[in-house]
Image 1: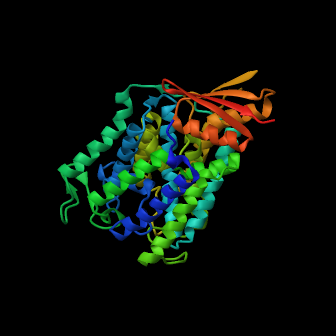
Image 2: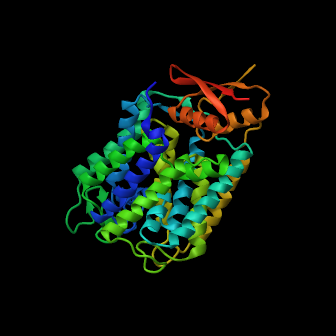
Image 3: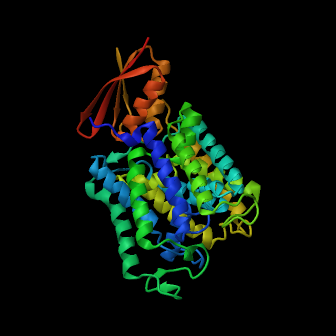
Length: 361
Length: 73
């Protein structure tokens, strides 16, 4: 049996450190502020790039996301860890994905971005991270009471390859219909002319960074939700050590690049409504916990053949459509007109799922 | 007596939860845990070590892993 270096303590710390360095570097190369990598924001941009929502400032097929899935697939194939499987309550996972996205967009970021925002000096992220931990803690209570979405079934190799193929398809579309100077659209793809969606590192660099992170994250099982869940549920620090490494290295890299500005005010792509930063991320944290992974982890799982994780990802992409079409997403000006209602409904749905989907031993 | 825990098809944290429940509640000291992903294998092994248990053997059987775990007395 070959030893998996990335599954060791040193390995997970190394993976967190690599992400912590690459994310601020991607920001330096063009990605939005404190958003070197944000899985929720980037899936939201993909949703916009495909026209599922028409928020003009957040439309771009982010190559990092494509790279995450394909990099994970490469690692899974290289190390005989590709396991095509599906069938563990897919639609429940879709709904959880949608509300996870809605919660994340009330805060304005996934757990990765919460860490990167803090690493850039945005103190509002503390509220988001506190909310994330609270939501995950709620999730652990359900786990302790028998919450379980049931077993997956083995599936066809082709079934496991579908999600990577979809991502490959997105990449081909990007190459066929690239962004054109001053044009908001190239045939079927939408592009932002201003705002976060207009800010991006060069395609090839973003894709390569995504591939590298996808590869090593698949091997290490890096998961920000799992980090806090394992601490709360098992008193285990393994995954958390990777998260801490990410935060530390991202802070150092931001300081080196001059990308660190501490405070609550005037932070990039952020608002300072503390309650809704907390509540949005609490909803997202609960949904991630109930679905068994943070948005990044869901992409890596999808790359290694987990069809249910792929459904969660598409739940998030569709959730982004709802979030922007219905005015649920926040902006630097504050929460969206219906954001608060969406958080309340999201909690009701997640609690319904948590209470009702329990297996008696 | 060996207690068998079938965690095949379950994603994290279920396999670890099932194993920990068994270690805490069962009289047995020998456990066989069946999982079908490498991540679950690693997670259960890590949990076993934190519970004063030893992973004696990891057998690969097709797409599955059979972990033999013994609780140190």
